[in-house]
Each structure stands twice: as C-alpha cells, then as structure tokens.
Image (tube, rainbow, N blue to C red; front, side, top):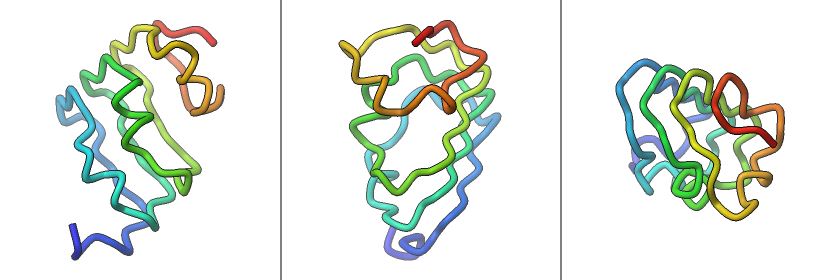
Length: 87
C-alpha cells in the first residue's frame, strides 16, 4: 500500500467485492472511493476501515442491510443510495 499512499481516486466498482479490506483505511489521501455494483452487505466493516478524508463514497447497487447500531449515519445520507438501507 506504500505505493498508493497518495492515491486520491479509487474505482473498485463492478468487481464482486464482498468486504472492504482494512488496508483501504491506510490510504490517507483518498478522497473518492467508488464501490458501486459489488456485493457489499455490511456497512460496519466499511465504516471501521475508512478514514475521514473520504468525501465521495459511492455504494449504489450493493445488497447492504441495515446494521451497525446507528454507526452507518457517520457516512452521511448522500453516500448511501439505491440500497436496502434507509437512514
């Protein structure tokens, strides 16, 4: 991940991703993360791994279920759309 430490835009959409690797949280310059059209089901792991530098997070069309005891609100309403979750 050292080679990617200055990465600002990361498009992982349409890759059949089920979970977000913790290494994503080490990308301190990351500003935009696109994760649409994957198989992400849990927001809890995502929230724990992301840093506050993320400004745009696209989670469209993932089978996300509501969980996390309200922690999903830390992502903000604008980033979570076209999923089962309702804030």
